[in-house]
Image (cartoon, rainbow, N blue to C red; front, side, top):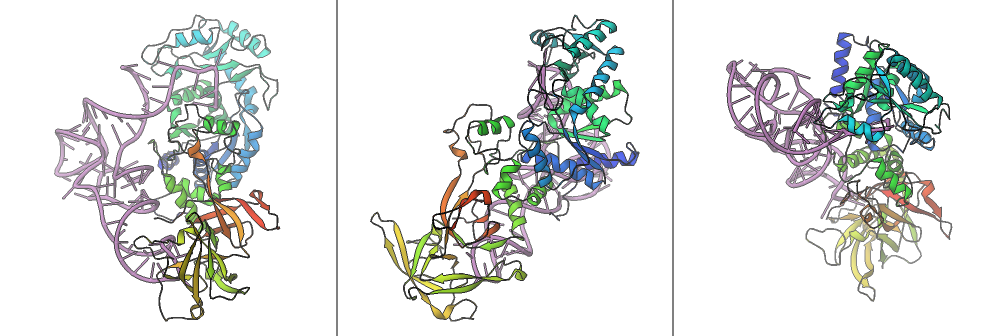
Length: 551
RNA sequence: UGGGGUAUGGCCAAGUGGUAAGGCAACGGAUUCUGAUUCCGUGAUGCGCAGGUUCGAAUCCUGCUACCCUAGCCA
């Protein structure tokens, strides 16, 4: 994790420090991560998860996982397990797992209280009329003709709403605040609506459901949340959040809402609408497609929880809208993996090399270190023979300036093995390079202290008869080129999001994470591998990062 | 056009009146059996703009400008 100085503090900590100084919450820090179970979690949620859980951890406080399931029409249980899995995978444990729907009875009671105190009323306006009465950004709204209903009438009407006497949209319960408020959220906001829908948790027990603005502060208060952290777009809702708690007067001290800027990544679209459409239309293999910015997708791509947590900590927290460069995320995964993963030889766009002066049929093993960072990880033996594969990028028939890898007449070191000199370049009929011929110098074997001459280049290789074919995929993230998430798109307009793969050859290895020379990192996910005809393991999908090789 | 926010080097981001942290990216250089890694080094005379207060301002005041959010019976 980051040990960089200056990182790890943010404005929310300042608020908490101040609260602790004044004793507002008696030193308690209780946060919560409140997803609505209507999709998979993505990297943006990871920022919120890290913020909430880490803040609690930092102050020795608590953090709940709470499903904000107040809208029965949009939520599905299938997302619940993925959410819990992702939070756990990131390395966090919640103090309590709760459902907003478990508070429905208490929320109803709160609503009744407001009615009894003349602070809420049942309104019969249609959705359209409601919109007209609400006014505009610049014009104040008009009071509903139903605003003056008596407390008794409101009580019985609300009870009838609960009893199912009315159809969806026929009536709503509204808070009585101020139709002339410059903040539209305060213009007698709806706090309960009718929805005859099956709720995943409460079934058909309810046909009226609380709105977010009414439910959320109550949920926080019931759980004893002290700092309710949410994103910037809720800033305008804070007055209503405070109003609900103040008018109810049931909790002291009441929780406070704090807003921060949500995460944006360059060229990455994270709206659930966009991601869900990709999944629904089969444009990706699922929510965990490696190209997806979901936590599940990143996991399958080879990201570690440590890297994601480190990233979330390094980017900081502020109220300024910003777009973090995706390079930063990649830096974090490289930084994490490089110190804890072994190296393996893998070549892409493999090019056959024949060592013409090496005995045919002979196979020898040369020693190579498993890690250059960890000497204690030891070495392994890799095969070497007359026929090898090298990376297509490690040979240029006509070398560009300052190219010091293999080209006709040039000598390079094969890492762990010998010096080889390119003597010939064999072409196919179409002019492409078929294979190259080299000679090796037995005296230059690695580890034997040859000092006769130096070479400027060292390249890696894979022995041909033992190599495992695979596809090295360098996935692009979901690119937003020309797309902003609001427009329609199809598989064609989404070409930019396609993964591109290159055929590769690798030394045999178990399905774990390794570092590839020059290629970055990958994970050979077991579920992405299969056996080929000869019983050899083939990694159909090898998830990698962009190459570190620059031209 | 009302209200609410935000503006610090290419990208994040500290800073809370005392003379601009750090990270990413970039670019130099050293080391290197892979142009990786590692290691050093380089960048705002300047903190959206214009004034003002002060011995001193990114931080305080005034006036502008730009961008974001906001008119769901979504969250």
